Length: 206
Image (tube, rainbow, N blue to C red; front, top):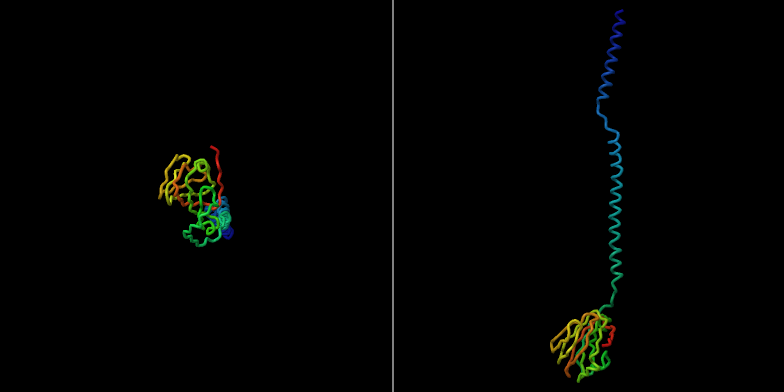
């Protein structure tokens, strides 16, 4: 009878110990399954974000040469300009320019710049004949300026009216501005610079 009681006591103690260990295990906090899933998803998405960022940087880098190449392709290339000099010689004044009442001394700028610009001295032949001279017109240019070397010239410009230009006077004529010459002195000489070298002149009816 004594042996049976001790065996029963040992069995009860064993069951009690197992119950306590089970409670301890259940009391230990476990990581929620959702949080674990999120951490795994974040770990997986991190490499994707890095890959996307590196791809966007690669695209940006590859886009720069294309843009610069497009700009260089759009900009026309001109031949290299060369040195030009022109000294005064009376025989260089020729009646082969735009107006029959003027002689032109070309300064070689058109040839030296391969058509980028033209510069010439214009000698107006007197006396002035308004019937031939005073014709309203405009030039299809990008830039035009005139400087009075000798004498005087009376000109009309659209939006500016009639202006007397004397020796030392200079002015610019914006592209396609309507203008004409009213009068000039018999010794009038002008320096004219125009871009480009070749351009269109349109005569207008009064």
